[in-house]
Image 1 (cartoon, rainbow, N blue to C red):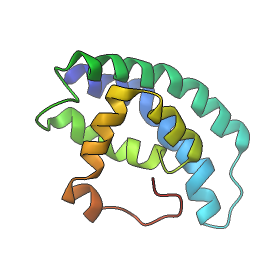
Image 2 (cartoon, rainbow, N blue to C red; image 1 turned 90 degrees about the horizontal axis):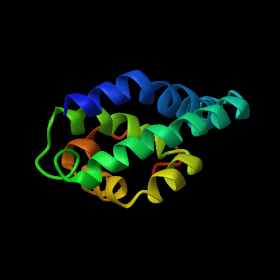
Image 3 (tube, rainbow, N blue to C red; image 1 turned 30 degrees about the horizontal axis):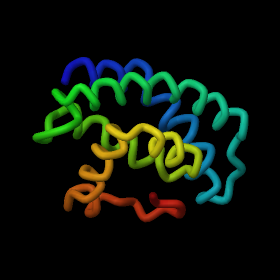
Length: 121
C-alpha cells in the first residue's frame, strides 16, 4: 500500500493530473487552450508509472481486492487521467490496472464525486 502511494505521489500525480488531465480536459472545458506538448510529456511519463502500477496490481496484493488507502489515493488521479482519450487508451492496455479501475469507478463514492466534465471515461 505504501509503495503505491509513494509511486503516485512522487511520479504519478504530475503527469497524470497536472499534465494530461489539466491540458487535455480541464483547460479546454474552461474555454482555455491546453498545451499538447504538456499532454505528450505527461503521457511519456505516465507509461512508466502505469507500468509499475500494472505490475503491482497483477501481483494481487494491492489494487486487487479489499479497498485500501492506496486505492483511495490513486482513484481520483486515475479518474482525472482517463477523461483524456490518451489516458483512457493507456490504461486500457494494462489489464490488471484496468480491472482495478473498472471496480473502483463502479463504486458509489466514485460516481457521487464525478465532477461531470466532458470526456468522462
